[in-house]
Amino acid sequence: MVSYKLHYFNLDARAELVRLLLAYGGIKYEDVRYSFDEWPTAKETGPFPLKQIPVLEVDGKPICQSNTICRYLSRVLGIDGKDDVEKALIDMVADTCTYEIVEKAYDHRAPFAEPDENKRIEKGKVFRDEKLEPFLIKLDSLYKKLGGKYFVGDQLTYADLAYYRMINNVKPLLADLPTPHPELKNLYVRISEEPKIKEWEKTKAEVIF
Image (cartoon, rainbow, N blue to C red):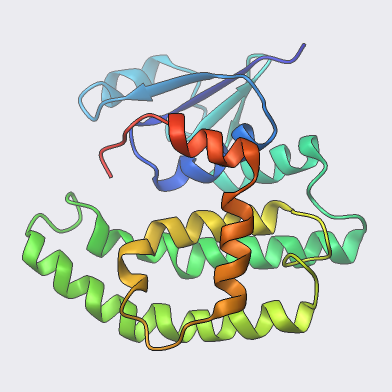
């Protein structure tokens, strides 16, 4: 039996999609979470070849880079696409959600990026209007053009979990969006009702942000 150990901070950030994939697959793993104070020592003594996290140890072998870890797990779970074109489309959707929204949202979400709460609120409004709304319009169009029940085909894939994770990341901003995107909302609800995802949301550890 393969053993897994995930190393990260007590944040969602770059490990949350990894955790979602592990939860969806019902994969048991050791969940190691470092405080910011612990990390400088841990990174010099732990299994971190690039001196950064997240790292997923697979039978003691460290895998670095969050997207690499996610693609590995999607292959293990068989939710990475049926052929080369599907695999590319799934990666396209997942990378787009991650790079265009999740990685650009820290400024208004993370206290270490902006300590002033009022400024974070204002930055969130700017992000919503200038980035999130135009992005969701394009993503909605892409979802309709690909034409499946899910983003790629009629089975849930890594792309759908990446989308679900992205929406959770910006959920406080969604109420004030001018465009409703009912198809994307329906997709989010269907993903959230997956039994293992629902259980994960009920039982996951509380994070700093």
